[in-house]
Length: 465
Image 1 (spheres, rainbow, N blue to C red):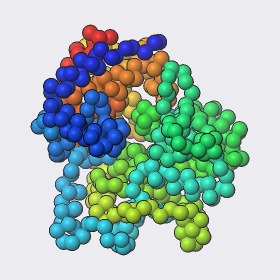
Image 2 (image 1 turned 135 degrees about the vertical axis):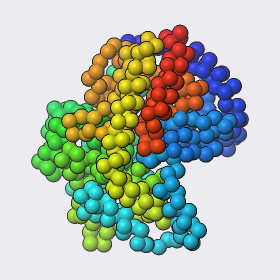
Image 3 (image 1 turned 90 degrees about the horizontal axis):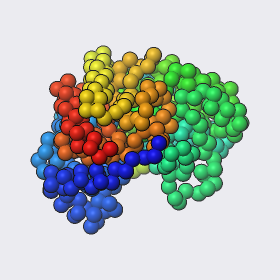
Image 4 (image 1 turned 90 degrees about the vertical axis):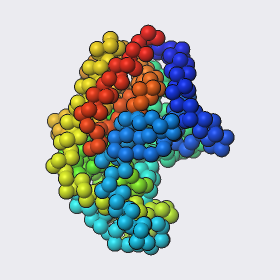
């Protein structure tokens, strides 16, 4: 189906938003004088302008225009306890007051404690820290290439592993039916030519990829829960096939758990599937709101960045790796999640289920559909706190792959990613990709408020479709 023309609707929504948030609009004009597009992360820089943050607490943020926005973005889905949870902020405050917390350039006991938690909760043998998920996946790929002596990297179409050369291939569908391509100029073709793209939740496609490239593959990197590709959990059959094929061909299996780590349980998501990768990348939740990431996994692979392995992989992590404040926040967050696992995950799972039902029902009640939310659990994942609504051109509940939800011929991607976001901002609700994640700070009353906002947004949108 030909994509809808949203230009008139976006123009009217933008004009209404200019009136709704004049202070944020003015700050955006100021920001554009000194920063590209007024900021430093493209996903945050919505058009015509993003809400400018004043402060944040729990499920809400307050913008520069003093609107209290109900937020389901929650720090790129990192804030599983909500914005500025006291369990973290109070620990940081005490540290700063006692002369701890800022960069000193030394090792400390905190790093040991956080690494011990990660190893214990994920089954990893060794951990090394860095500062972002993109760096963690990049270092994991470097380790795999060094360990195997092979060049090629296998990933899935729609999978986002961060802004590094191997990650900037096969992420978005630019047009209906178009194959996955390269995401950025400036990447050497020698690198992009080493990336092989396969299908998500498609064991047969995965087997074909391994048969064709297996003896040249260094690694297969995959998200057990694909984020940018549509908030879709892997099937147990798919991850089991990945493990079997990686073993058969001598390929390093890397799980990108940047989003999924500690989101569905107090540890790695792979454990719920009974599948252990060779390496895993963690970030977001493990930092407790601070910039922290980690690569964790088999000792014989990890040692390639250490003296015992000849320091063959230059995994330095960066100046701010294992920053004391980040480690302190991580210890507080991870300790809390482990100790309260039996309470937190069922609770946010119930909120996630309520969120998905509420959004679908709200749009159905206003005649804007069919709308289906991805993010539901499966046979091995019981508690899912995530949701993205998809505006389908025809009803289809089998949304199992990124192609199912990101092809403009099958669903209204612009409505999900841009139009709805702006319409909900007029209702003082902040979402990314249509919804997001429930945190422990959200309540059923917040879900009801979201549903009401979706109904009002639908009334704005429907006359233009």
